[in-house]
Amino acid sequence: MDDVMNAKRVIGSLFLASLCTGLASTDEPRIVRLLAPVETIEEVQPKDQEKQPGKDKDKKPPEKKLSDQPDTDIFTQAPAPIREALGFNPQMLGDKYGKFAFSTVTFVGTQTLTTTTTTQQIVSPGGPPITTTQTTTTSVSQSRNVLIPVPGQGAFKVAENASPIPVDRFFFTYNFFNDIRSVMNGQNLPITSTQTATTQRNIRGTQITTTTTSTATIPGTPSFVDLHREVIGFEKTFLDGNASIELRIPVSQQLSSLDEFRSQHLNDITIIGKYAFLFNRDTGDVLSGGLAITAPTGGGIETIDGTVNSTLLQPWIGYVLNLDRFYVHAFHSVVLPTDNRDVSLFFNDFGIGYWTYLGSPDRAIRFVVPTFEAHITTPLSNREAGAPITVPDVVVLTAGMHVGMFRNSILTIGVGAPISGPRVYGMEAYVQYNRRF
Image (cartoon, rainbow, N blue to C red; front, side, top):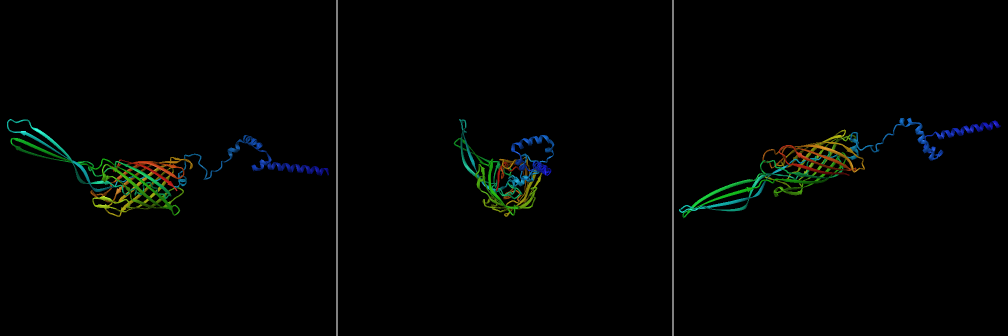
């Protein structure tokens, strides 16, 4: 009996020992905490790490989830996930192509009439001549046919503050064009004409000589014309983000020393339809196209051939190609006016950007992207001298910086200048703001 009891005690002791050993070796920390106080665990863990230094080295780090924040703000991968997070690529800056109307302008100048009278005795005894001069100035006017800059059609060029990618956004654009120049050589020079007449008569031994000089000066076109232009608008997507409709409402203030060159009014409103025929949302590459319609809401253009008030139809295609940190985007469009007195145009716009910095979404500066663009304008009609409306061949280079702010805004600044002759303006400055919704 005692042997049986002793055997039971031994078996029970072995069972309890094996049970305690199994509980102590389990991987569940909850059970460990049940068997040992917290302070014991905290004391044991460092000791275990010291005893097994190679265990952590062999242990693989956990894989990062897509939602995890990057370890650094400077990205080293292709920017496709960046664009996915931002929702849209930075837009193109654009340029001014230089449109002029051949119009009749009346210039008001001055006419100066100078009369010189010389009186001299011609009988003995003769004396020295006596000379008197009288000058009068009056106003005089003259009409001339000159080229006047046309701001009224506004920001109808599809590449201005736009991306080939459809996006939901509100936007504002400000452009300043300095020293807009005429493409007609010499029209800014004043016209000066001088006429001289001399009469002579004798009265009782006195000779009277009268010389009359008339000088008329008609001023040329203003020495400067500056243009301020503001555009507000929005773009709204549909068809699961593959298409969009855009509205642009521009206003402008053209400044000059001559009334005929000054203007301040609402420009033509433009509506742009966009559809992405090919859209790779993993890489951000896109091929899109559409039609821009510019309605003559800003009034007509006064020319020597009457008032031109045409609607502009602008079919276009555009694309974005991403190459690691670089991206290339472009627009190609043809402008077809409904009035053949207006000029048809061919636009080719190219841009390249480089993602230099990317911050986390909660930062004030989300990204920084410098950009460089080339814009080529080719007139397809009205190339002859004296056309009612004319546009010269123009090549413009622009450079700027896109700064992403928080999750949904882009602030862009830039400058541009034509490099081909004749230079239709001196310099252009840009400020653009885009806010996604």
